[in-house]
Length: 533
Image 1 (tube, rainbow, N blue to C red):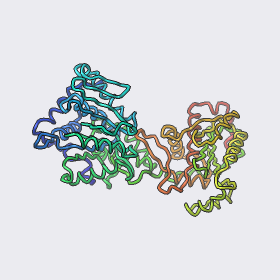
Image 2: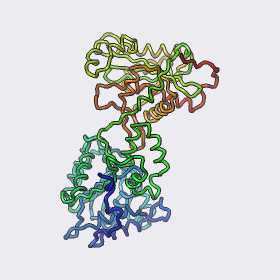
Image 3: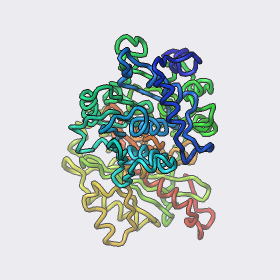
Image 4: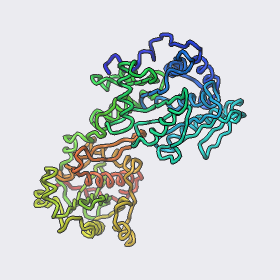
């Protein structure tokens, strides 16, 4: 899109939208008649851009009186109040003027939790609107609502729903399509819609990343139809997205791509803070552009760090001075047993954190690894930056021995280790009384750890000694973010590149940061113990 097409013109140009049969007005009247528990006025509220969408979708009809649009693809940023709009549309088809007796309507998302958001919104509307409360049976456990008089049934379902095939929906709202990893549920829903006359599929999503997802196919098609509506008059693309030449820091662009921003959503103060932090964080910058400016990223990963900033932590470390000091250990044993990483994090009273890595690899694979990824693995081994052992897989007894050695040398407060892939190491250490902390690698677990690591790097408080393998792993690390802003590591496009050291480092730093926040690490600290060589 160019700068002049960050949004469809009809959203805000004030023109009168076609409504020859009054169905658009009828839909607006019904939705605003309902009561909403979160509304200051008590009524379901449609902001101007939302009302334009409703009028466009339901008011544009064919000569036989049926809706022109059978598929709507709305792409708008996070915090754009898609769920409220979805709930209003679902109510139109459950009890409102768009209902079909005996029909099935659905909301669908990648997870049951996400899909249930629409049900929760609908239940709130029904319970706060007396006439609807008497007419609709709500089944919260099943995430279902039933209009009793005409047997219209609404149900929330997720991408792993086993009963998706065989459906004949009259209306389906799909939330955050960009999160769908496969097209199974989408295919089942679309096939079902083809069986139902005048059905409507309404997709609302934030922008995604990469081209290997079901959402990208829809997005690309929406772009084509937006450029030439004659391609498919039954498909309505509603795209809010910044152009390739737009400055992502320009607040005028923010307002164009976030139709509710002038009305207070999302919060502009929060966006300003986010944008300020993203100035020096490529991964956060890409997340900002995707989540808030509607920019579909070409690849599913972004470089995590500006390595020049990371290199500012290349200060010599005096290991002897750290003897007996509080220490938090992160362990990544991998899943293929071709590499393992142990990283010790030493929080200092001045707010700095020193990290020291030990990287393990089997000797017999080094030459092949070096030829594959171009990294100097043999030199790293010879320079004693890499610990090796005979064979083609990591000897976990060697790794376990190093962890025990660290426990002897330092005041190890926690050993963060993933419960999966621990291969018995975790159990043996725990049985011997070592302080194990089970640390998953999900968004929820890694998000805080990565944020703590980023903060230290950007503030110049992470001291790493310039360890070449650790640096390589940080440079290889890319981030994948969920819609809550939590992040976790993934490899870049070259799957041979390793990130194990970065994962272990973030785990150790995250646990150290949590302990520092708790305020108990340095209760008995004696000044003068921090010595950098």
